[in-house]
Image 1 (cartoon, helix red, strand yellow):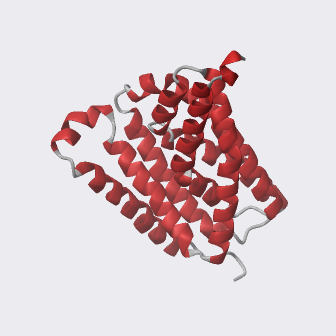
Image 2: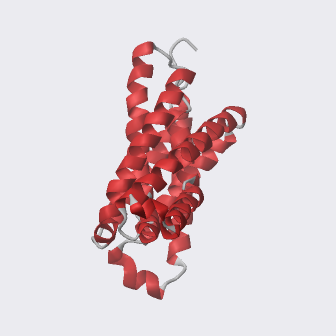
Amino acid sequence: MESLQTAAFWLGLFKIVWINIILSGDNAVVIALAARTLPAPQQKKAVFWGSGAAVVLRIALTVVAARLLGLAYLQIVGGCLLLWIGLQLLRDEEAEGEDSAARSHSHLFGAIRTILIADLVMSLDNVIGVAAAAQGDLLLLALGLAVSIPLVIFGSSFMIRLMARFPMIVVLGAGLIGWVGGETIASDVALHDFSASHPALHYLAAALGAALVVGVGRLWQGRTPPPAGT
């Protein structure tokens, strides 16, 4: 516990919290999108448990982040997962009218699962900065990420209220997930040499990811049959 009394420890803690404030914006959007169709009490549960479990996963991920990022094709697979999640979240907008208790219960666990998968993929490169700030101090890492939990929860809850008031934010949020998905694919180790010689690839892949999610998602919605009895 002597490390708690050093200025270096508190400086490192400040760095980790600050990094998470900067990098948690897109994670808050994912959590809000995944939880927005649930009843209010279950929204709170999904945000709380999803955020908490995601931070625990992020701690574990940070320990092995450097090795994971060195695996070829891992970020391509992860980016494709994000594109699929963006499509699913946009499609879920059509299911908001279905509110049976059983469906709501299953959606709670589905929302938490979506939050965990998306946070895991989106944090692959972010955790490198956190790991560097922690400098191998696991106590510092755990404390820094734990402090960030209320920040993510507050941001997610705020985004849910905004989405309820301005439905267009749902589309923009899905587009953001597609953007990050495209960036993730273009950042894969297998594409490093090609990306280095074509700097525009990073932004092109991100733009295509966003366009794919929004375009296909809206087309998907347009082909969804109306609920029975309407």
